[in-house]
Length: 114
Length: 112
Image (tube, rainbow over all chains, first blue to last red; front, top):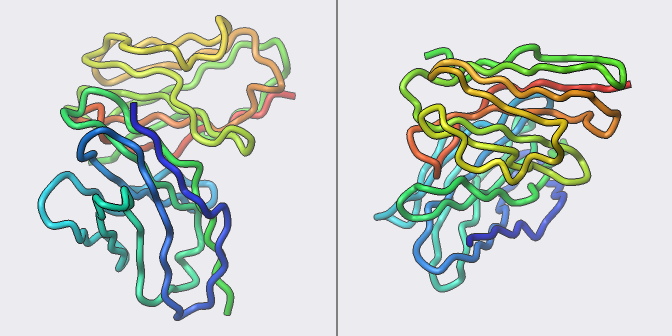
């Protein structure tokens, strides 16, 4: 069975600074990988996903993530953070074949300061 | 597409009352998921359906919880009787496959 670890519970960055949120997964093969964002009082919105091919994936809102098989990681990055990016971010892993539900990490809360 | 639609958005009820949460998935999606989110336990998968059939309900916490999907466009999650520890945000999600999920806005349930 797959599992996901998001090592950072809470991260604070300054507006305009770069951002990297960490995600490590455990799975016996190449998984499907996802990042979701949840703003306060809202549902989870899909930022980006990786199924296969290019290991650098572009998403919405200027986010990107890179799949590194050797490190079992799928870290989320943004070159310049905006105050509106303050939210909870969830990494999720899915199994090849798509027959079992996603497994979500515990989430990383991002705070943005002026 | 309107996305996954959940109702109500907020529900406050007294302990012991029956609560019914509703979900309309995205048209054409074969999978429907019910999740519960709390500060302590994070996001938990309660149950999921494929083509209206429950596939795995091992996440349903107790017999007080039940879920149905009478047709492809509607699902309910029922709690009877409700307890204060059931207070949480309940999300419905749908997808073409099990390994993806499009979420609704959630129902915030408060049991007093």
